[in-house]
Image (cartoon, rainbow, N blue to C red; front, side):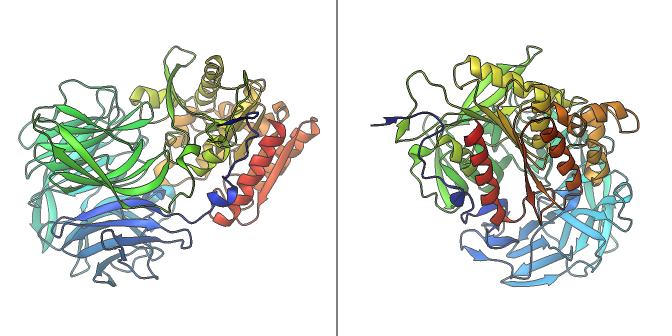
Length: 640
């Protein structure tokens, strides 16, 4: 029987030490189709590297001196390709491509430290790897050259096969190797605004390959995104296209026009924002069958798709978060999945046909993360909330209630709440297992994730609401969502804490400035306080991101950058605020944070600063996580 006790004061077995316990994280999956073997990359707490692992055999593929990571576009992504027991991968810090065979690794690309590689695919019959290359001969962001190149794995020669556009992604050979599909886009668009899908013939050229007869399949600059091509057969492919306003499955056959696979669009996104190369939200099982994931209300659905007739059958899915869906056979896929009571794991899903013509499913954990040594009775289940913004449009949030097998709140009492302001800002929060969230919900706090306008997974219009409105639309949406959740009777209106990191930390500070009567306190992790630094400290991929977010460049609309910079409104912050910042950050000079805090204190209000001596704009050292999260918990418990 549960004991009545005031919300926010429950005794909990979850500690900040548990947050920093050893746990595996999984980045990518790749399948060697010839051998039927699955490989993955994993990050281990005691090791800073990304390691390639033979998934079934649980054996490392690369030695201790290798780090399988790509840094193209600043975020990287797909780092490896596999064929006939050979793994090709990008390595840092030398930025070369290596071949790993039976535990032996050798560099096969030239020693050119100014080159960066990523998004690899291997030709099905020839020893050729096609990938994206960034040339940093001139390291200025505007001068970096991006192209598609072919690497001869025997000779080590690198040949450019597509150039002239600012960005390339998704190179994918057809099963017979006679064609290739890829995507491209140009500045000032980002990959969140447009991507164009191209198919070309692969022809022999000077002992290597070249491209001929290029056909633009779909995607128009500034208007639509065509991404994630996967071949259904030698002459037809599937891709995800958002021309309807939602990322939907489409099909293209050589000699014909592209067409939607579904009979009519549905209000769900079958794609992800292209932050990372090689993202895969679906897998082709056969020319007429695919397994697809789609986002609905911030949670993931799974479908079986008949690519010939457009029928869509929903599957039971216990994983509200999943990524990197890869085909293993004509009836099975692997993916990285997480749920509320289970950390990230590699999952095998097998389709089991039924006499009725529908499908049953079997989910198996192939590689778990470190076991969660805690009863699932402490783990909250997310509730998807459909709310409305100040213009009457849909606004989405996830609500995680206080959860404990030992305690319940006092009669008539509402719980305090942590409102989490997600980063990106064109991204979305996860509904999967999260130790930090659990730290609070197990103590009797509610936890709220608001998918403000600009968040991904809710269609093109929803994502583009943030255009020119960064620091306004996101802040107002979080305010409106919080107020409506108060009206639903789910939280105590006097006990609301706000937290966020990087762009989310910026949102916290803007919220405390604009809506001081709503929040009791806030924590900003690395949040920007001067918006001009978005434009000044960036790489090629995000060169024009600030223009889209703020509505122009700093020299065009300096007043907007100043008006939306918390640095110049510190005196307006009346609520207690905790500022957690690295002393080495180029985006937020620590002297600015010290000045910011002094101004708040000089007005008679509370500002505490936690200075991270050897950190920049992220927390790289897991040893300091405990200090940060414990400091924040203590801060909120004292004030809220």
